[in-house]
Image (tube, rainbow, N blue to C red; front, side, top):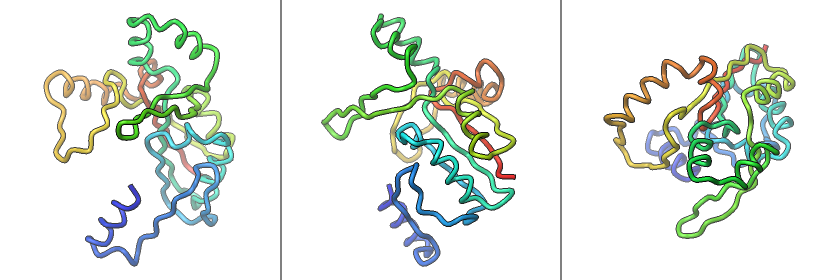
Length: 192
């Protein structure tokens, strides 16, 4: 992803104005008050054992008044629970009820690997961001009714039932209980 971003920056004539850094989510090499905005999407903090340390580093990297948008995988994702119940995956259900930690199967080409993952609840995410110093923490959901579909095809558009469910999600994203049920939780927060 970084290589593609570098190529895009070069094509746009921005190569000398943009820096790309690869780092662990809980070991950010960023100077204090460097940014007005910080974005972390697709659950980087689900795989950071010291996620609270990472949230504190994000806080320090933002200028006062800076805003954070973050997504993490949700422990209470509706589509996972429905599928686990329907497919009678009793062992997985018991494990998910017992712990926030699990191993997710991820495909790398033809190979499947198990990746250590910490799942968040809306309450735990909100509390961790507040402990890190953030204020105005707002938590909602992404992909409430739809399963994540990872495709990088240009022009990929939702149609039919998927499009209607996405429209419904836009209206319900921030409202309980829907704000707690998506595949991902989305958090907005501010550094005071």
